[in-house]
Image (cartoon, rainbow, N blue to C red; front, side):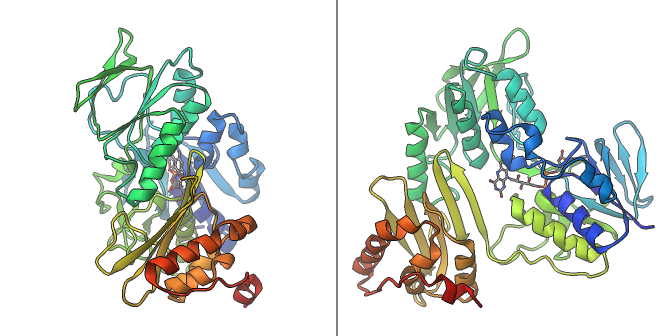
Amino acid sequence: MEHVVIIGNGISGVTAARHIRKLSDKKITIVSGETDYFFSRTALMYIYMGHMKFEHTQPYESWFWKKNRIELKKGFVTKVHTTEKEIEFTNGEKLSFDKLIIATGSKPNKFGWPGQDLKGVMGMYHKQDLDSLEKYAPDNKTCKRAVIVGGGLIGIELAEMLHSRNIPVTFLVRENSFWNGVLPAQESAMINREILENHIDLRLGVNLKEIKADANGKAKSVVIAETGEEIACDVVGLTAGVSPNIDFIKDTDIETGRGAKVNRFLETNIKDIYAIGDCAEQHEAIGQRRPIEAVWYTGRMMGETVAQTICGNRIEYKPGHWFNSAKFIDIEYQTYGWVWAQPKDNEARFYWEHESGKKCIHINYDKKSKEFIGINTFGIRMRHEFFDKVLTEKRTVEYVLEHLADANFDPEFYKLHEPEIVAKFNKENNTNIQLKKKSWKRIFSV
Ligand SMILES: Cc1cc2nc3c(=O)[nH]c(=O)nc-3n(C[C@H](O)[C@H](O)[C@H](O)COP(=O)(O)OP(=O)(O)OC[C@H]3O[C@@H](n4cnc5c(N)ncnc54)[C@H](O)[C@@H]3O)c2cc1C
């Protein structure tokens, strides 16, 4: 019987295993060095914040694996012997495969900062990082201040986590406004305000120089490169982005760039070896998408796709329209299509912000054709299906505004904000767009 070995028990590897089982009788083994069972990485913060226990982040009961004949092996893989078709573990043990799926996710970036491996210094990616945070920052007596290095989605989550236990936080962000390589200036400014309102000591435009140790080899302070200022702290969170976790294949003949290089079928250059999820890098970007996408739903989609291919139905990975969502402390964020930090030459923008300064929409569209390109929404929840359809049908910005009632989730939003939004667009663009009533059934019943 063919043996499929999957390295990584995250969303990508586990989705692949589940779908291979649905489609075939193959022997399946999932290997992970992190935890015995799959858990939801995106829920890690809620454990620290006391909203759930670790067990609650595991979507499947422990009997699920046995029932579905998916073998689980705890162990860290150090080598892949591609000719022998074997993987090797830290203790020298080997496991042979007929097909191998590399689904090893990401690891937090470290840029060679002095002190980056001290006690009390951690990323926020793996379960072990959470355990380390619990150990060094259980409360504000043990941890009098934490410093977070790197402003992005994980950095702000870590700030919120620490803040929930009343631990003072200093947040060092290299850019001069939060996440402004991704967010347009208005949204970035909104999140700067949100961070400051939550009493987080946000420092913009600064870099970490070094982390200093106390006599026990534990972090005691950080030094800021630009000013030389030394900030006393007990914990340092390194959240300056993530990279594909593929060091263990670097000296094999599997082609790597930043990640494990794959074609559209998620195949590496070595027959019978595939890579999916955060650790996979497309040879050529798909449309405007990045060659590496470290998001949950694309890992799941790649898992489904590779399962088909491995079970004899070789299909291309087609991720569809880009979307993403996150939460910046209390402000929900969604994005559909493309709204770059800076508009491209052919693009026009429409921005509306509520007087509270905590809600906005930002629409990107083509100057000439008026074709809708993308939307950011902050503090407002929109419907994925609506924007997916609008992007597929290449609708105009006018169409989107006319149908805002169909786009949003919140019935109150219509009454509260839509007339104001459309009036602002009409005024700025000398148009006469009229809001249409909600027509959910008409649009989505087909
Ligand atoms: C705090 C946090 C919040 C996030 N929030 C969001 C969000 O809101 N929305 C979103 O879309 N995405 C979010 N993400 C990103 C998302 O979690 C990842 O994109 C996703 O988990 C990647 O899944 P994966 O299966 O590719 O890899 P992973 O989940 O990283 O799983 C890979 C597994 O392989 C194991 N492994 C690695 N190397 C080896 C080895 N050599 N031997 C054995 N095992 C190995 C790892 O330990 C890990 O268990 C978040 C990430 C973090 C850290």
